[in-house]
Image (cartoon, rainbow, N blue to C red; front, side, top):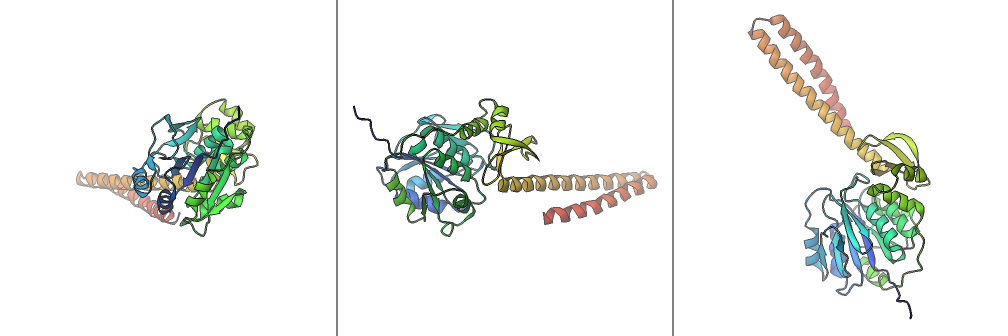
Length: 328
């Protein structure tokens, strides 16, 4: 009996800022009989999203936030729900609240890696408009497992950083514009998938780390080397991934960063710490001056003056800190 030909029937799309117009045009341009499942990650964090409704209204395919372990259907669009990674497990969609990657949840790389592991040559990975470089490593994983890679032309993207990172670090199969993306994908899904390729161990190790499976420390040692940098999310040691381009880091709790997203996250955490310190200093100044007034009213001018001097001294430090925060 002849073996049925497998086609490229898994489309995974990663995008961020500036993506909604492109996604709406994509939904509008895809055929109603699309023989593939489409899974989309947008960096929405924990904020509510009406993207499935917008996509459903724009074209012939139904778009939804999937339920955990929902079975994928062809001709359907699945959008990662707020604050959940969306992964592929066989023909099912798995939703998790595992550690953030590139300071994002949902993140692109976990979806792309899981698609590469589960469906290999049947996978088409797409990177669209967005800042920083989430998705580049995931696109590399798809290519390493025999899948196809598609990237929006940076000059066509509202935010060019994500597409440009992909082009700089991946041998991309197709570069598209907002206008050509629907037809390109409609054509690619009708192509036969290539012969199955063994999944590289490093990709399996990394996915196990992100999902909290297997021996985390053994997996980290297999793919990286301990660095002198701590994770800005959990303060654990970061392992630097060997031979990664762009440079990437992981900790034992599952957080992952490119060098660019690590710098961004460090700056964000530093800003939060500085603002918290400034607020604490201002609250202390207010309390000191209130106590100084109480002592003076009670006839204890000496203690009142001492507290006022301390408040004045702290105010000077607060002014310096505020200038530092504003310039960071």
